[in-house]
Length: 167
Image 1 (tube, rainbow, N blue to C red):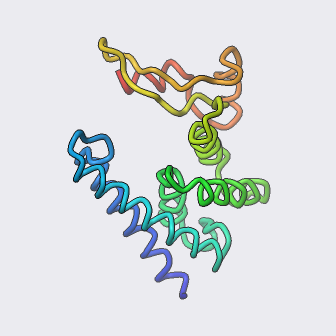
Image 2 (tube, helix red, strand yellow):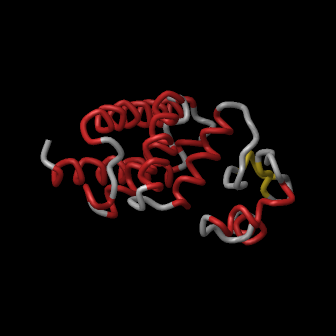
Image 3 (tube, rainbow, N blue to C red):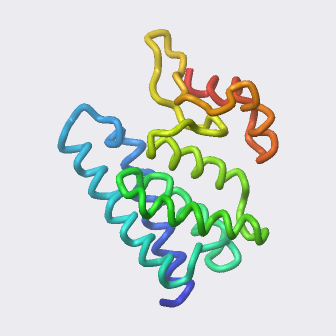
């Protein structure tokens, strides 16, 4: 597949993901909307897996910034496809190690994968829910006392600033 076509496909998939997320389908009480979200993310996860077969991790150098960001988003939302998420995580780790991807993206994907495995997250990027007063409830962190230090190390704002956006 030509890289320009691949870039276009990835950005189109991210746009469809974003459109569904904005409508609230991902967290809807409507089973039909939830099912549509699950089908979309499963299709995208399957396609990302095939793309990783073809090119490895789609880095910005390979497909451009927008498409690389799209690939990361698709991996983030492959919650019911842990094999795809774990593979994306390994390939993204390699890309970050080679200076071809952002450590911030890796931190978010690492936390998302850990939470999906039922484990404690590292960077405090994943929110479990919202209290009645509107304050967010983060998933448990392995080292809560070090979260801001770990976040700073990968270019993520302090935890309090991050969760303030959800309040």
